[in-house]
Length: 215
Image (cartoon, rainbow, N blue to C red):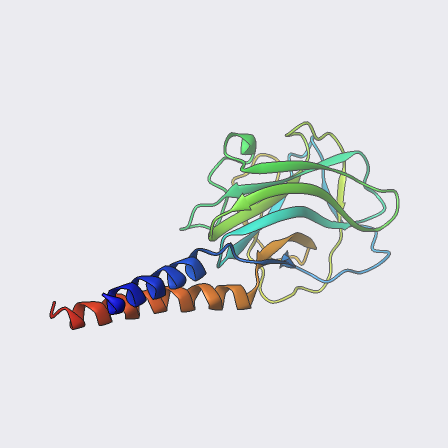
């Protein structure tokens, strides 16, 4: 009887460890390029040209998005939308058409462009499960009517970027425009603790089956 009680107590302890909410830490989830202060902004998006620019990002764990933004040049003004959208896993492009992103958007924010160059962003509180998503920016949708002047810079890694221009279908883009997504991701120690709890549960169950003579 004592052995059974000890086993149950150990199993409950491992289960509690594995189910403990993961502690989160602030992180830059996506950053396609470095910042260049003073850039005038050469990539212009308006409601008229229907220009949309975006990039894919992948979450390895369930995470919380806090904001999205881009490097803005001095020619911008008004409001620009920033949205998180699902992407087609075969193409990496948004599953919705360029002019109907709102139909599938998981969340969006409006960003106020500034008359001076620098990073601009908008708050976007959104919980996402692990997977691949797209962040998109533009005008003429979600109530945004401004002019976006996006800065070019030096790419960080190999960002998977895409764009649509004057009603065209989404296509890959190689220019180094600065886009970014910030959020909260699980701390590595919390992930390790959860995995240890799951491993402990598995070991205890296997050990109990062997003790009972089960296959």
